[in-house]
Length: 318
Image 1 (cartoon, rainbow, N blue to C red):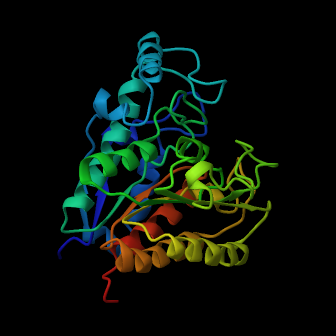
Image 2 (tube, rainbow, N blue to C red; image 1 turned 180 degrees about the horizontal axis):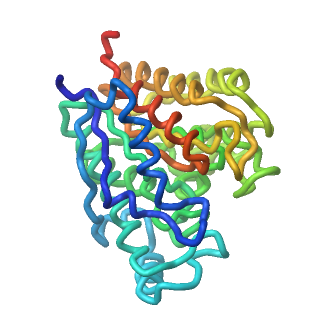
């Protein structure tokens, strides 16, 4: 059976996580893979490994000072990379750089074909700012992928869509004044959840005003709330048709996640992916790069990400 989507997986990205009972542990990759193997779509994937991103690639998005600090803290092997959410440990630099390299490998695969869709489970590290780590995110592979798509592949308009429970603040503020990054984010209202950003009135700055959409969701919002909000996202993307779609599909927006308060099921993630495929076929030659993002209940993330992959790998004719 010929492959219909690319999957980046393996020990190189599985090792990204934090010790001592941290919510973002190193068991997340294998929990997803165990669930995926039960799906018929498992046999339709071209599985590729990650590589370590180069310093030049890290600096597509990040400042040299941030890259230097992560390298030094990784050498020291203790302390925190931010105000307390993201611990340093020996090798954290290399592990984080493998995630970036994995996302870049996925991007390269879909840009060079023949398969237009790809997924990386341990990716979508959307909180890291250009000059700082934040919220379990050391390097922002989303932002680096956006820059790589423009520098390497000549794309101009890129859509970043985020359905993680947390606002994708690192991406939003990293491109807040960039009119060619179309940003749409459904997230739990920042009055109730980290990082406290992403209000309705955050619509971009300067030339980018109106090119950013933030949709705060109330705690307890379920699939019906999601579907109603999704219609707005889809209309927004149609008004600003992209050449590539990045989907950050954090599973912490499913009900029962230990650190968030939304109540979607995995069918919300399937719906978003299915509808984005239609839009991508119309505007982007089918190109979608899915990134796992958050999710701290292992059963939830296994189900949600498997549904995303099933939709990415589905035969477009079906």
